[in-house]
Length: 141
Length: 242
Image (cartoon, rainbow over all chains, first blue to last red; front, side):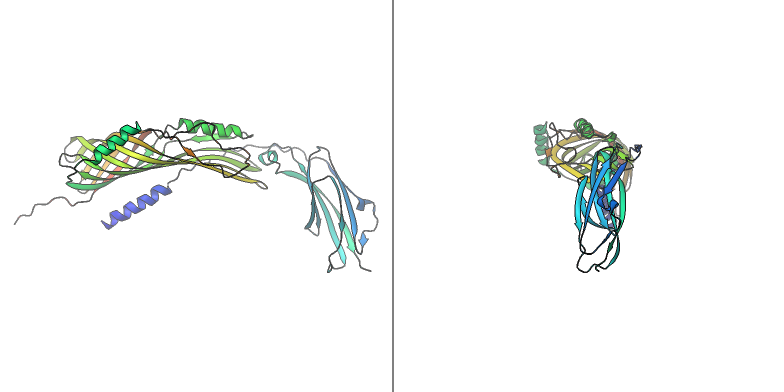
């Protein structure tokens, strides 16, 4: 009788865990096009000396041949400091109070639509990116 | 049809049951379903997304369990209570290197009711019986559309439910061994097809809406077949010789 009760309880539990499942996949191959030509121009390109003591103006302009720009991220030593959704923008780089003197890497990453036709591309959640780097030097003297 | 089923239930409830033995039977097997409206709804959902989504399954035959507690009458009639559980669903998918999209429906039906069976042919060891159930089904359908990519995630859900009466009739072949019987059972379940009470979507602005464009009905009707195991809960009667 005890075994029968156990059987009934386990049957109830088993029956309800027996849930319909189908995880079949329809895999589609996506051919990615050649990345677009992304040209990044900055006011720093024309400066011979990138040393600054209190602030530095950084201007950029992004040109993409496919014409669909998503955004640009600006990093200092791999820390994101600014995000812009325009192809032309400028920021003042001002060191924090305890910033140490020395060289810092300034990166600009520009993201553009891939036009691959993939799921993420059609949801505007996939991009090609190009980046440009400059070494800026903080010197308080 | 619903009125007729309720009337029949009331008539059966008034029966004076004089049981000799009681038992419990468990049937595990497969069930198939009509679900024509839910199939069309799945196709409609697939057409709403701007991707080449492929529909894989449309409510195929799937697990079905039936549990019955019965009392055996002197004339061989078994009357009792029944619980049945069945589940099925639909699935569609699109996948590429960047992510995947799934459109799923999960239907589960929990059914409670009364059952009766009567042996047409039998010699003690074997018997061939006809059986019938009157059941009230709680049918639940959960519709999911999930999109997963590296930078975009969306999970939209719509729930619908209904209570739907129905009846099942069929045949069962039993092989009786002392306190246990083994058997095969097969029949047809006819659902009255109540319309679903449809909830609201979990997302307010999804890529593609899960909203239904017409009334949907439960449509659980279909064939059922399974292996049956019966436990007799009373010990067999013995004669004491002094």
